Length: 96
Image (cartoon, rainbow, N blue to C red; front, side, top):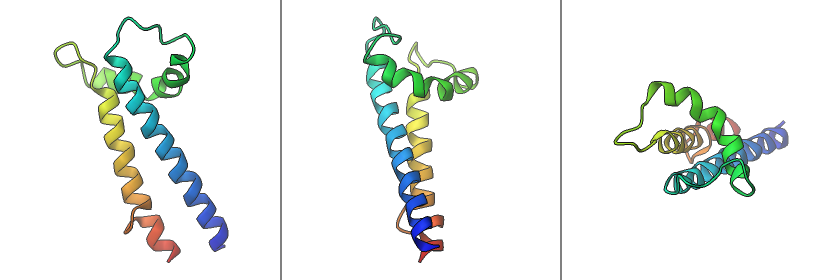
């Protein structure tokens, strides 16, 4: 059971890390509004992140013309990773 749980924690950590990484790249892409996000390699970053951004944009409007929703998602994913898998995270404590 511990091996399966450890594998699940590793997969969850990898998924949260990849999403955080993609949102950080998405923040950088917001600095270049002229880029076409439907073209390679930008679509590799835009397509997995856009489903998260669309509903949040309805709640949080751009501030001074700047879309801050990717920054919010970096915070959410970082918080989830720490709460679940950090040194004293819920899933970490359940394994030990």
